[in-house]
Amino acid sequence: MTDRVAIITGGSRGIGRATALAAAARGYKVVVGYASNQAAANEVVASIEAKNGKAIAVKCDVGSESAILALFAAADAFGTLGALVNNGGIVGKSGVRVDEMSAERIQRMMAVNVTGSILCAREAVKRMSTRHGGKGGVIVNVSSVAAKLGSANTYVDYAASKGAIDSFTVGLGHEVAGDGIRVAAIRPGLIDTEIHASGGEPDRAHRLAHMVPMKRVGTADEIAKAILWLMSDDASYVTGAILDVSGGR
Image (cartoon, helix red, strand yellow):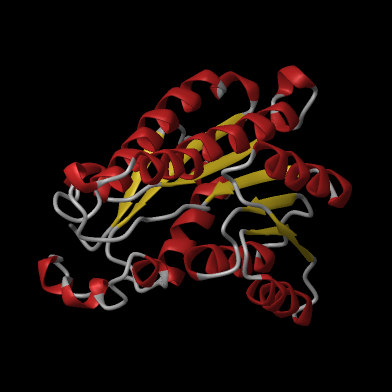
């Protein structure tokens, strides 16, 4: 149990929501970052407070550095940062080939999924690193098995952004291992969340479930439990690691 603060970007729905609830159950004070759906974020906060937990919702488009700085400033006022879950991310319209993609789509994808995660990690390291007077902590990046599969004819730009997150996880993990900070990533497979709807294919996970060795989609709760394990002292010797939670895919 801890009374330290956990920032969870994209914390209002899906994997982020499940992680926020699980972190609060472990004693974290939770900062629920959300891009636009304030009602959903407020519902997460209310659910946490109903069980005597502590949480706040902070609007943050992680594609904006100023929004990220405001998110961390709100967290500073809430308590001592102990964990960051880089979950905020987007997908573009599914089924678009690279030769059909606009520069704007690609730039937005990288700004949110890659640059945003790196900037959030930068701010977390400034606060948690023992070389900056911090008390250590954990960063968990949410990647995707798309990083391994490439997602040809679906969304190669999204897969590429998650490949960058994998590389970043290894590099940052090595960089801050001596600073009291552990860094790891989760690679979810086909998970039953709303992100598929934002790409135009709300039934995508269930439609492709037959391709998963376990023959089913995963749940947001299953991903959240893996994230919370990485955040816990049970994973005290784990850093620079990437854990597939994908049913074997």
